[in-house]
Image 1 (spheres, rainbow, N blue to C red):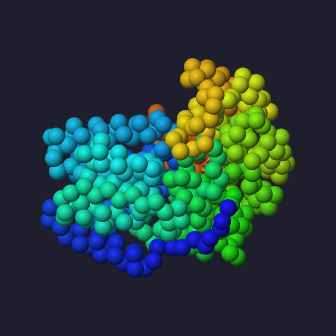
Image 2 (cartoon, rainbow, N blue to C red):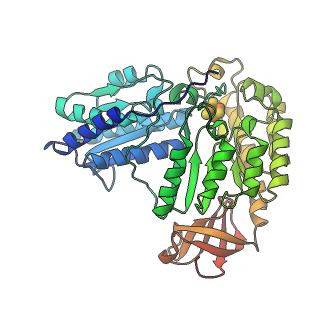
Length: 472
Ligand code: SF4
């Protein structure tokens, strides 16, 4: 795989978009409120914070809901078919709303738009969509929206550039005052045979580590207590920039900034290094939890998936992690029904789950994505077989999760209070080090603080507890 240095958006490009944002603010007949609907992963959630920042720079404010907004934008995902269908279903729903509110603008952006032929499909089949653009040109929102409003015609701009510039210095409106996402790299070079991401997000481009660390320090000054470093495969951070830190070095430096809590995702098992495991073990603020997508337990299927590790290797990594960080919580992603998966292959996945005893697992039925090698593989697994298998897998993991949560009863844990519990306003909800939600009696004054909680009970996927002392 070629490794070329990543480039950042030029001051000229940024200046042009700022000028469009300024000009847009002065338009009389322009949308005043926006609503962003986000699908998919944390990378998309982070992109939506940039969209919000750009809208605010253009003089828009967030609407109370999509029914009240002058502009609704869908930041889409195409990793699975149902995410794509849900997004398109919701876009179509707005077509009806437009009949009663003709000034409403509908925009679509994100990964779904980067798929080949999607621009043409939007033009043809979704005539009520006013604006569409992809992940590559998100920073051009001010210009594209300005053109839509001034020229009064649809603007569809989808660029194909697998080494697009890193969008530094764009405005951001963070959705939380407590925790923040910090993207450290964009794109993916791995081409797992089922995955559309490398086609829609392009090649790996790492941000300059100095900028990443500066961002973390800035967030800390603003009062952010927890940072999640994001990338499709954080373990290959820096490989595209000569002389850049490795991911393990970046994590260590991020830990040394003193940000109270650090997490990261996603880690490809093939790239996890002993150096990284060592940093996790020695760091002060890096959480003892790791998302390590196994995807499957059968070597035959892992090979067909182009994952480049075996079940044995995965188990070795897990045992190294547990030797270095004994209380580490492991979560994973698992796919059932990959083409050619037999009962025996599926049993290998169940065996992996039983052997590792993951704290939690995200389970998915394989979803063919046009343009990926797996979509044209022989022996696609019938839907009813996949559905039966996933039920078995979910039940298996559910028992393990319950057991793992129960084993935490009696522990005193440091919980970051995030807000009132959704079920009980007299309770506060927060996350422990292992990324598990903990509910405990308390009030809004605790939000944003670390609180010592004694765990008293375990539910299906959450814990409950009582406060040991005042927030620290
Ligand atoms: S590592 Fe594999 S699954 Fe993850 S984004 Fe890259 S190609 Fe997709």
